[in-house]
Each structure stands twice: as C-alpha cells, then as structure tokens.
Image 1 (tube, helix red, strand yellow):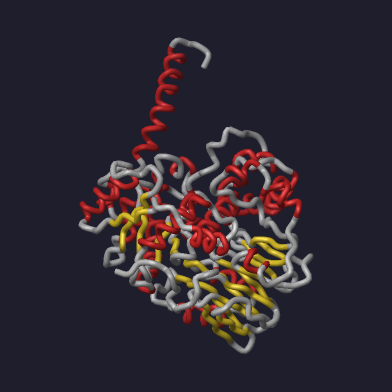
Image 2: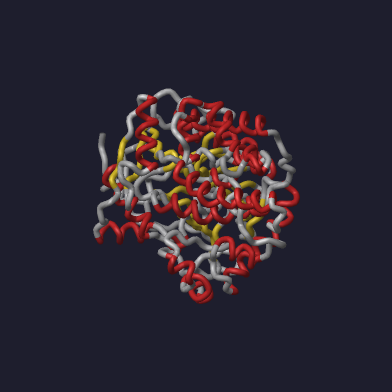
Length: 502
C-alpha cells in the first residue's frame, strides 16, 4: 500500500490542493490548475478537485467537489448534475434538490432568471466571496487564495478586534465569528445559505418548515437508515474508504454504518501527544476491531514536521493551526494513497453542545461571545449580532433551538469546515453526517435523548450493528462526569432528606 503525498494523483503540485477560484474573467491563477467556462464565469481549480458540468438551453450547472444522492445511491456526479440542470426551472426547485444531497460540494447554477452559488449542508466545501462593497466579484475556497489573485485589502478592525484577542492568540483551533474574514469586503458563505451572484447577497434557505418533535424510536430508525444509505452511496462511488476511529460516539456510529457496505474500510487511529497504547482512543478501537476481525492501523503523528512542510501547510489554508499541522504531517507520511477519509464531523449539531452553558436569559451577542469564549470586542459582537438578526426568525420557523442552529452555522460552518480544509493537502474527506435530511431527523428527537449518554446515538448504533457496542464509548469522559456529578447528587439528596436548604 502506497503512502505519502509528494505529488497529487494527477501529478500536479500539492500547493493549494483541492481548491478553486471563481472569476468573472479568464485568468491563469496557479501553475497546473484547470479552468472551465461556465455561463457567465470561469471556474479555476486544482486538478485533484472534481468539477462536473451539465446544461440545458436555459441552465448551466457546475458541481465543484462530489455529491451523494441518498435516493439514488448509484447516481454519478454527472447524473446528479444533469438532474439539477433539468429541474432548474425555478430557484426553489434547485434549492429543494440540492438540500437532499450529501457529499462535499459547492454548486454553481446559472439560469436565465438567477445565478446562485451554494454548498453542502454544513459548508464543508468552503466558499468565500466578495460582497457588494468590493469592486470585483469572485468566489474561492479560501479567502487567502483569492488574495493571491485579486487586490484584497486586510481589514484593520479584524486584526485589532479578533486576530490580536486572547481567543485567537491562545486557542489552538480558533475560528472566525459570523461570516467575517481578515479581508475587507470578503465574507464566508455560512451553512443553510445560498449566494445570489447578481446582488452578492447571501440568503438562508431550507429551514422554513417546522421540524416537529419525533419519538426516540422514529428518529433512531430514520436516522440510521439515512446514515447507512449515505455510507453505501460513498462505498459505491469510492471503493477505497478509510475510517478514523477513536473511543467516541461519532466514529462508533460510522463504524456501525460501515458494517452495511460490504468490504471493511481501512481503519486507523492517529497517535500523537501523550496517546499511548493504553489510552482509550487506541486501546478500545484495537479491541473492538479485533473482535470484528477487522484490521486496526496506527498512524504515528508524533514526529516534528520540517520547515518545508510547515511552510507548505500554512500557505494552503487560513487559519492554519500548529496542532493540525503536526497531524497532517503524520498523515502525509502514513495515510494510504487514494483513500477517502470518513469524517465524523457535523454529528455534534444534534448533541446539544452549547445547551449546558451556565449563562441564562435571552441569547444576545454577548451570550454567544461567552459560550464560545471569544473576547467581546466590538468586531466579534457586531458579527454575532448580524448572525442573530436572521437566525432568530429561522429558529422560530423551523423549531430548531437557536443554540443548535448556532452550532450548525457557526461552530461547524467555521471551525469544522476550516479543519477539513486544512487536511485537503493530504486527503479528501466524506462526512456522512453532512446531510440536511439526516441532521433534521436527529434534531427532531427530544433534547433529553440528544444529551449524554446520547440515547439517540446508542439506539441508532443498536439498529445498525449492535456488535460494535461490545466496547464502552468514551469511558474516560463518563468517569469524569461521574466523579464530578455523583457526589453532588448524593449531597443534594442528603440535604433534602434533612430538610436543609439546597
């Protein structure tokens, strides 16, 4: 099995690997890149990034990346694009079809009556764009990629109000608030939004109907069915799949779904920092995979990256984090060539991540700054305020908790999306939970079933492959919660029994 990444699969330089740039005029931005004419624009892309086109007399559709249709698992990107072109009689029909698609993609649809750009459910195929204050209309997979081609001015307010704050300077995985960037007039397209290319305005879509509350059984059954279908679709498209596995919930759910795809994926765990053979994230996968008679591989990420790799890594994405760089270096040396990694990202949208916050009262920009531990600078607060202006109505219309929507569009759309972009240098990723139908199904479960110990996820795993529950899930975390909370619970009951004030 080959390892390493000195060249891309097309023999091209790995600089800006799997990135794209959309411009109104033809340019040759980077050596070795391909260019393709659309109806009104030009798509320039690294050759390792798939680009597929289809058209009718009225419409040109360009798919950047790859898509999975859970209703037609054998549909190729070309067939999906053709279906989109045929259905693009009006804006709502395009949005409706795109909302069902899994995968990791950006989609450009140019019609007689509209020109839009949108992306996958969680925005993992990132899109940055110039707003209507900028003289040139462009879109790109990274704001810094566009800056290498276009005249973009850094925003001093962003530098002072965010990049020089405690959060950005001390957080090893910091992420930007709202749709902000370090450049004036350049924004990030957030999940659940499409970009009107004619006005350069972003609009929410896809969350106008009430999600409604469903029973635990209903959510687990339908969630498991969608997850398994997406995994089968990925396996049908890409025979070489690699599953990173730890002791956690996300990888265990993916492992259960992988039991439905036939051949076992390449299962691996990254060893870095203080992770030894007895650590739960190494010991539990080893025992579990052994009981399933599946191989378990360890990719050593403990070696220090050289200066050449660090320079290359940091020139490919922004923000680029040191810890992620070390992991990427280990992957560059030990990850099997040609495999697509199965990521567990986005699952946290349904796991009430911010619900345990001690802050009470109405959710205002200051609240969001506190729960994210960002500094409450005018820059941060203004972008959270801007997000809230549209999110409040969407949360009310959809029935989705505002904090869950915040995690979806902000924490996942900025933090997780950046994390995936940082590893485009070494591999492509398929994220099964990056699916609007799946996330809405999981969010329909009652909150108590989406909190620790995650009854919804346990029930889904039981339906998919109960044998993968032979080993405990995150036992170290459960132990910490027990030690922290059980004595308090015992004391509360004792005080109550003694009629003392609790």
